[in-house]
Image (tube, rainbow, N blue to C red; front, side):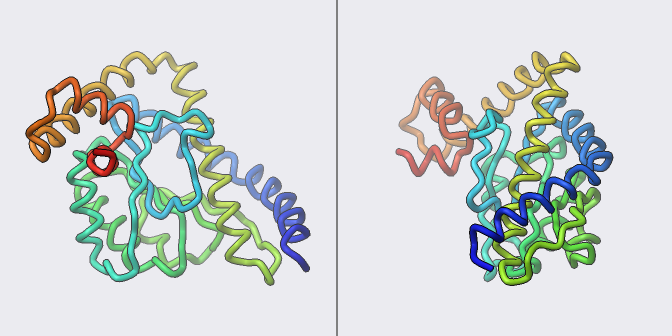
Length: 224
């Protein structure tokens, strides 16, 4: 079966799986809304090929985290998250990746020990990462075997997009958006302070503008 046929068949299977997982999706959405409403952000592990802005989600609330197979203890990735001011109100969400399950498991457990909400989106019912996350969205999804990893990556990214859209809708209808925006400003102030410490030539206004534009200290520094 070629790639286009695999995508077509996979899309049908994915829609069925997402419908079956709707109760779990809604519970996870509620937990994310609660954390985001208190100023939290989503730190997403291994979101390769996913653009949160494409579904309208605020860039400052969605922080991609690069995970390396060589960073088995997750120390390097955690240090980068600390630069972005990670706190106990934040969420660490992982998209299951068999090649990165070691450092991802370490990252989820490290975040959980520090009081962060941890969540996993997976297409593997027996994923080794399941025990490392406090929340799990598992899609009962068996794509075409010839394109297994390709289709599961697409499905997990699509599920993440659906989740973020639900979070935005729930935040709006729950009336929590003004508070979330206020808390987001507080997070931006903290990130701007970190950026000013690392780049002393920047004024507070310049640092805030860079954080609002690029979302994280790391991306702001790369843009300088």
